[in-house]
Amino acid sequence: QVQLVESGGGLVQAGGSLRLSCAASGRTFSSYAMGWFRQAPGKEREFVSSVSWSGSSTYYSDSVKGRFTISRDNAKNTVYLQMNSLKPEDTAVYYCARGKGGVAAITGALYEYWGQGTQVTVSS
Image (cartoon, rainbow, N blue to C red; front, side):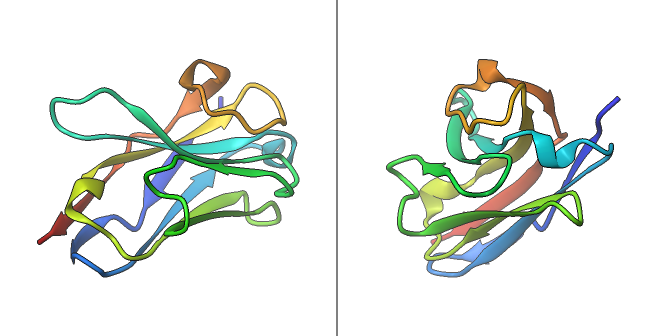
C-alpha cells in the first residue's frame, strides 16, 4: 500500500513563501507521476500542479503559474511544491497524489493514492 505524507504547510503573510513536501512509501515512486491539488473551504478540489515520472514534464494551473514550482527527488521518494508570492486566495488544504501512470495529468480521476493534506493559510 502506498502512503503519502505531506508537510510544510502553515500560516504565512501575503507575498511570502512556503515549500510543501510529500514523502511517499514504496519502491516504485519513480515510475509514477505526482500531483498537487488543493481544496478551499466551501469549494471543490482543484488541480494545482503535476510532474511526470522523470520530472521532465510539469503542468500548472493558470492561478499558480509563475509563482509555484513543482519538483521531485526520486532518490528520496519525495515531491515538492515551492510556493512564492502567496496570496490569500491560495489558502486551502493542499493534497499530494500519486498518478495511475507516469504521465503528468491535471485530472484528479487519474490519480490513485492521496495524502491527508496540509493546511496553507495566507493572511492579508
